[in-house]
Length: 68
Image (cartoon, rainbow, N blue to C red; front, side, top):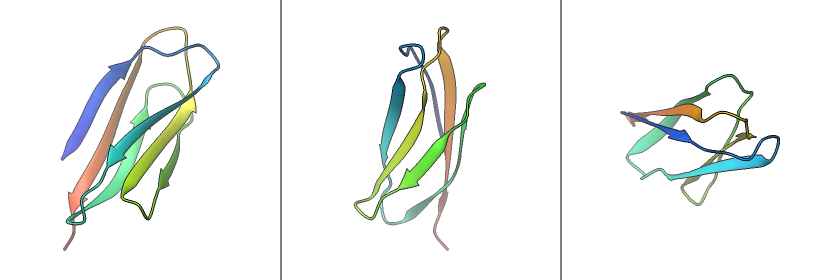
C-alpha cells in the first residue's frame, strides 16, 4: 500500500508529485528524504505532494490505506 521512488529535481525549485487516489483508498502519509513536505489531497481525487528540489536525487514514499 506504499508507492515509492526517487526523483531528480532542480535545487531550490518547487517540485510536485501527483497521485490519483481511487475512492476505495485514502492517503495516510508522505515522506520525502531530508526535506519538508506539504501534502494536499484534492476533492478531484488528486493528491499533491510538494517540496523544494535538492542537489542530490530525492527518495520519497507515499502510503495509502483501504477505506473501512
